[in-house]
Image (tube, rainbow, N blue to C red; front, top):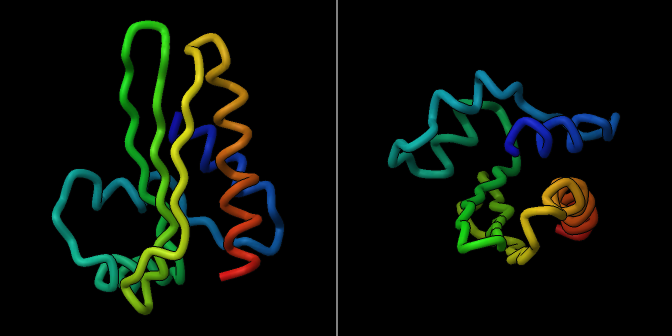
Amino acid sequence: MVDDIITGLSRIKWLFVIARNSSFVYKSKAVDVRQLGHGLGVRYVLRSGVRKSGERVRIGAQLIDAHRGVQVWAERYDWLLGDIFAVQDEIPTSVIARSNRA
């Protein structure tokens, strides 16, 4: 799922998206988001989490301004597992729309 969201974000030519391998260095580590942003050279960090219950999946996403260390947007997506590709397409669109207003 993460790969598909990164791919969706990478399609936007003006958006600077870090490669999966670079960003996964920080996976499951307790790092201050300002330090993470500085280390990767990015303004925004997208955090997410996935939970599954039966045939449903819930994805929480937060867009964080890494320079200020504040969350600027958050959304929760609830979908049926059969619609997982739709949510993978929706998340990058939502992030792009929000980053234009941040």
